[in-house]
Length: 199
Image 1 (cartoon, rainbow, N blue to C red):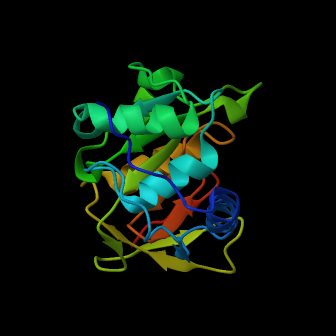
Image 2: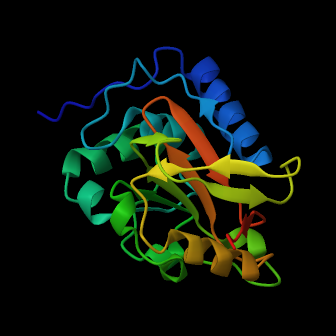
């Protein structure tokens, strides 16, 4: 018999709190916000933070793509379908949300929907699991929601991540949005974020 791990005991308040934390992270790029996800025990390797985000943001109208590591575990697909109703797809370019467990080997941004000039909102939001924040050499960010400059780092990161961020910003208003999630924290880099390159 198929057994599905539970979601939040109080889904309304927990999902609202998660949604607010995510929106606050996007409003203040590069700032780390707490997620209340300790009670969750999603099927591994789906992290508690990524599971909380899925519960708060996904529904039957949001096609979802999983990276190779997550897609290999059928229990994750079963858990997401049961609790969110979201359709799982194999083409990353059609995804509204993409969940990435292997951050260091994430696909290139252009593999996902970048939106169009007419409909930039039809791009993909990447939900990327990380081990933590502030543990590596920081990137210096500026842009809407940042007073002056802000330092930000996460691990693990692709070696070419700074170049990816610069290329993504050059597409604005097109481009992907990035949401990084640890087990109980999140930070976001919307497509409007600029990277200040080091001299």
